[in-house]
Each structure stands twice: as structure tokens, then as C-alpha cells.
Length: 244
Image (cartoon, rainbow, N blue to C red):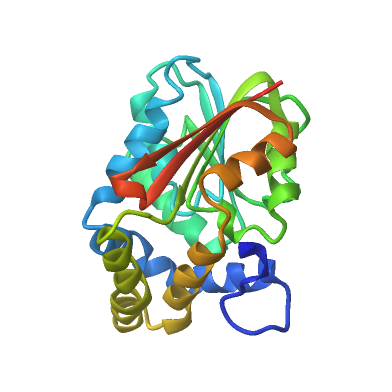
């Protein structure tokens, strides 16, 4: 399981190490996302947000919001949105996100705060939708994180999770593995000055229970009508479910 994979050493909690890692790479995070995905990550976010349109949520929680990319895009693609709360463990990522939100004059709609994804600082049955983009594989306890997201969802509320997955088609699987294992960590090392952060990315994706395995975890943690939609030949997947 990805929750047993840590960025740095075996000692210390995964939560603390993840916080330190994202604080370290925060200044380079948006740039490297665009560079290393060739800009495709923005398309993935758009497709994920569009999964929410049918239910037209008014109050949204974005967990592991980082620099608020998904929250900002959600505010633009869901015009009836009233409020988006973003939570992240990394103070440095949130500072960058707050500057982006202010520059786009979205501070009346999007509010960011530091918080733990396993113990969300909100009341039960609060949100119409909960979103996570590339964050659940970093949870120290995957099931606990999914259950707490379920807790803050209103009955009938929707979860939308974007996460890396592994393609299975030859030769794309082999190309993907080579890129993730060799090219991506090298570029990350040269650009972000934190070589272990992008080595961890490869290792955490390898360990993550993607596809049907993750849908089974969603079912176990209280979601129904769960769906997995692979994107870009399986590099990324959109997972959606409904709180019963």
C-alpha cells in the first residue's frame, strides 16, 4: 500500500515527511506539474471537475488542495458554486495558493486553511462535493482519509478523486515505467533540488491500489455507485462515488 511508502526515511511519520516534502518543492510545484506532464494534468483536472456538473454542487471541499489549482479551476467550471474550502498540510503550498487566488480575485469564493486530511476540521454532513487531485496516495492511512471525507459529505454528496494509475497496454506501460522511474526523478532533481521527492512519486504510484482495487476501498469506506474512468491510456484515473 502507498501509505507505507515515505519520501525520506523509515523513521518519522509519513504525514510529517509529506508536509516537509511539499514545503521543500512548493516554489517549483506548478512549473514541474506542467513540464513533467506536458500540460496534460490540466486536462485531467477539467475532466474530473466536469464529473461534478450533473449534481451542481454549491459547497465544495478540496482536500490536499496544494497550490489550489483544482479549486481555482472548479470555481470557473462550476458557475453556480458558492464556496470552496481548500485544506492542505503544507503551509508553503498554501501560501502560493493564496497568492494565486488573490491575483485572480477569487478570495471571496475560495478559502484555504492548513489541516490534516485524516482529521478534517469540518462538521459532519457539510459539503455537497469533496475533491482530491493527486493526494490520496499520500495519505498516512488511506481508509481513514476516505472515511473522513465521507463524514463531511452530505448524504447524496459526491466525491471526485484524481490519482495516478498504471497503464497496462504494451508498449505504453513500458514507456510509462521508464519515464516515471528514470526521466521524471532526474528532471525533478535538477529543477526542485529535492531528488527524493520525485523518487517518492514513482514509488508511491507503484504501491497505490489503483483501478478496481481502489474502487473496492471506496466501497468499503462508505461510497456507492463508484466509478473509475482511466485517462490518457491509464496514466491517470478519475474516481467518483456517492455518499449513501
